[in-house]
Structure formats: structure tokens, C-alpha cells
Length: 488
Ligand code: B12
Image 1 (tube, rainbow, N blue to C red):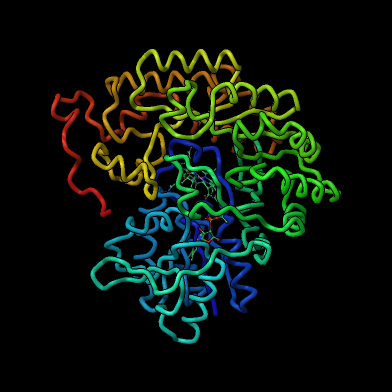
Image 2 (cartoon, helix red, strand yellow):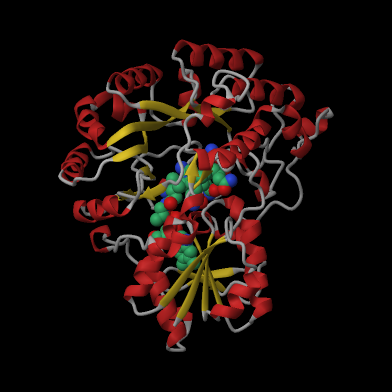
């Protein structure tokens, strides 16, 4: 049976990581491997880079099932449009939607009548079972871990819940199907970029993060043999997307040994980790370091003050942050990361943050505005104060409620913060230095990326988009939530 898997093009791509991080649809590559092993024909279409119109693809390929990946809540508006376009093209096609955002918060799709099934969990077995049911004309109600239309615009779960997959049994992702798009995948000056997963889940319970909630607190690892095979199947710039790299030091040592036994080395590796893990595991980091010429660690720094960290319940500590930066640099790792800016920030808080950045020379970092992500406990707790429920504004760069400072001033200081980073093409790292880091044929693209990111340093760009009133009356400042809040 023919199955088409689609990565949508999100409608909001101006701010955040989106302008300079464009990476492959890894989840769909895992699904493709599982479906091909089950005997189906599969194609992946990445609409961010596809030139052919969708209608033509559907007409030429005539899939019986179309699966849409909705990884970020930002992808929801495009997912809804796609689902209805597919049904309009051919009402007999089965439309399934899966991915982190809808698995965590399926309520975002309520009211859409063009979706036949939502996958509430990992997709390998579920999508294979769904396709088998369609192929054999059996009802989808027998497929575990799906949400099916209830006939009133809502969705209800199927009777069974699939167990978490044993990742040792999961096939490595199919990288051939995204080959036509590979050259488009990039992380700032690294292009083309590949992504890879060695583990799923995170044991920590940060209240703003949806990962542990999606995986129900589970943490599982791919087998060292499969990780090595995938490491060898990927190119020289590699972003390892695990949410918590080095999370299990013993397993991580075993994995490093497996990879070091391979002749393959990378030009650049990026991993995401926590400051406490890095500050406590210098030996482990030393073991990993030779695997790439440049090796960056992305830290969730969150907040530069102890009070700020406590309020976000990350369990991290600022002295550990400082120590982690020192350890990482001493071992030859590049330090990058993200700070969370609370709309409650005062002028003084911004200044403290800038002092911290200067004191520790942290200029390859980003700043996101504290955003309760649907599917988290924090989202439910924040409902009363949220004034915006337009998913296009959930890119972590929009205000979703009235800040303590006037909106204009908040964005001025927010942009001033961004200007201190290497992204400021007229600041610390001039644009021509970026150019020097890419091959000649990629210079045009690098220039376009850099131009797009300058938007993020301009308060007018944020003010043009914000849905928060600029000069609030006292009632608006503390008023009731907006009408039209999504269902709980
Ligand atoms: C890689 C990644 C990115 C990449 C982009 C990846 C891409 N190709 O789109 C980059 C770095 C660019 C990125 C950017 C952002 N990201 Co991001 N990202 C991730 C990360 C770390 C891994 C995703 C991944 O590849 N997982 C591995 C694959 C195998 O898993 P999967 O995609 O979930 O797929 C499985 C299932 O979901 C399911 N499935 C998937 N698709 C489908 C489809 C069907 C039909 C079915 C049946 C099943 C199914 O089956 C798959 C296999 O089991 C996740 C964290 C996470 N653990 O998910 C955050 C995460 C998704 N990102 C997040 C955020 C907040 C962002 C940013 C807003 C951050 C920022 N600072 O700007 C931006 C937004 C970008 C934008 N504007 O679109 C949040 C999303 C929260 C939310 N609910 O929206 C997450 C969860 C991180 C977090 N800790 O909170 N991100």
C-alpha cells in the first residue's frame, strides 16, 4: 500500500530557532523504516523545501494513507490546512496526524473533521498497525494508542494503549527518502546537517518542558550497534537530538566506546545536556571529545539567578552552571544554550542577565520568552493568565500575557539582549566572519539566513506581531482570560 508522510511548513517562522535551524523530519524517517519493513511503499515530502504543489504529489502518487507530522504546536495551523486540503483532493484517503505536539496536546485538533486518526504516542508500531488496518479494511478502533473522531468534532482514545517500544528493536531511520532535501538542512553555518537520536525521554521534571510528559517519564536507549550504524549513515555535521545527552553516564561510556571503534569522525557534533551532568562527568566528556573536530554542547541555562531557577523547578543550581561552562571549555567543547526570559523581568533583571553573559563570555546563546507549552502542567496552571491562544505565537518569542514592564520596553530590552550575541551581524561577530565559515556555494544561503535573523534584534518586528495590548488599562492588565480559550 502507498503511504505518504508529510512534514508541514509552519506558518510562523520568523523568530526563534526556525530561521537558522532547519533540520530533517527524523520522526518520519523512523516511521518510514517501520512501514517499509511491514511491506508498504513510502514517500516523505518535506513541504518546507518541496517545490511541487501538494495536489500534484497526491495526484501522481495516489497514497491510501497520508501521515502528517505535527512536532511543534506551531505546526498545528499548517497541519489543519493540510488535512483539509488532502480530504478535499480525495475524501477516501486516510489522514493520520502524529508527533510530539499533538501527542502531548491532541485538544489542539478538536473541531477538525478532516483527520481520521491522531497518534498519541510513538509512531513506529502504531502507524504500521493503522496502515495494516486500512489495507485489510478493518476498523481503526482495533489499533492501540490512537484517538479517533467521536462524530462531534472531538476525538476519543481507542481501547488499548500500546506499550513503550523497546528501542533495541526499532530500525534505524530511513535516510534515503529525504535525500532530495538533504542539502537544505542546516544549523546556522553548518550545512548540510544530519540529525540522529540515541535515546528517547528525560527523567527530569522541568515544569515548562513537555518531553517527560509525552514519554510519561520513561527514558529508553537505542542499542549501541544501531547507534553506530546510524552514526555511520549520517554526514559530517551531526545534531544529536536527545533531550538529555550523557543522561546515563554508564550507558554513555559504552556508547562512546562503540562509536570510537568506528572509523567515522564528524566535523561538527551538537548535543543537548544539563549543567549538572557536565560539571560532574569530565571523564565521560573527555571520552566523547575525539568524535568530532568541533563539538558543541547546548545547555538549558534557563535563568541566571538562583531564584529564577527555583521558580522553574529545574533542580539546577547557578554554581553548577558556571562550573559546567568551565569544564566544557577546558575540555575543548563549544558552549551554547538558552536562557528563559520571564515576562515578569524588571529592568534590573535584564541587567543581571547581561552581567552574567559578560562575566562568563556567553555570546553563542539564545533567549526565549517563558511560554507555557500545551501538554505541560505549566500550561494548565497558566490558563487563567494566558491572553493568547493563537498557536502561531507559541514560538517562545511572543508575549502571551502582559509583562511587568510596558510591552514596548520589554521588547526593547529583549532585543538588546539578543544584540549581545553572535547573531548580531553588526556586533560581536560581523557578517563577513560568518561568510568565512561556509563554502563559497553556500554563501548566498548563509547571507539570507543571517538577514532573516536580524529581525530578532528589532523590537518593531515583535511589536508588529504582539497580541498583547501596548498600553493596557488597569483592567486589561489583571483582567479575565480571553474568550476562545482551547478546551482542557
Ligand atoms: C529536533 C528538534 C527541533 C528542531 C526541528 C526539528 C524538525 N525537523 O522540525 C529545531 C532545533 C529546529 C527545533 C526548533 C524548535 N523547537 Co524543537 N525539538 C526538537 C527535539 C529536540 C527533537 C524532535 C525529534 O526529532 N525527535 C525524535 C523523533 C524520533 O521523535 P518525534 O518527532 O516525536 O517522532 C515520533 C513520534 O512523535 C511519532 N510521530 C511523529 N510524527 C508522526 C506522524 C504520524 C502520522 C504518526 C502516526 C506518528 C508520528 O512517531 C515518531 C517515532 O516514534 C524536540 C524534543 C523531543 N523529544 O521531541 C524539541 C521540541 C519538539 N521543540 C520544542 C520547541 C519549543 C522548539 C522551538 C519553539 C524552540 C525555540 N527556541 O525556538 C523551535 C520551533 C521551531 C519552529 N519554528 O518550527 C518543544 C516543543 C513543544 C511544543 N509542544 O511545541 C520540544 C518538545 C522541546 C522541549 N523540550 O520542550 N526543534
